[in-house]
Length: 93
Image 1: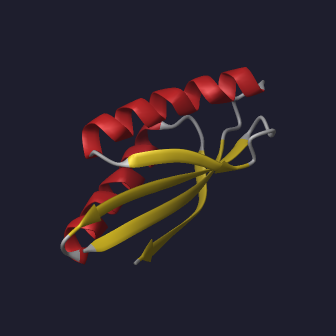
Image 2: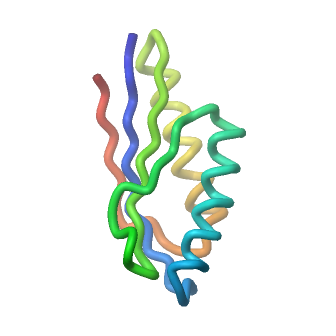
């Protein structure tokens, strides 16, 4: 069993309040959890308007399908988030 963890740090330049940021993250969470069957959580910068770090976790019996899902998620976030990915990291356990 392989557990994959993806951490994505995002800059949201058009977010003007915490409420607006959380609304954007809620939509992102809903889309990613439904489309890719992953767990999602905001990890850092909860009190910053324009910055966030999200964590995404999934598991599989092999590492390759997890890598594929994470690559699709990164592409999805780049295309559909009104902001920029600052950094991302993957870990496998």
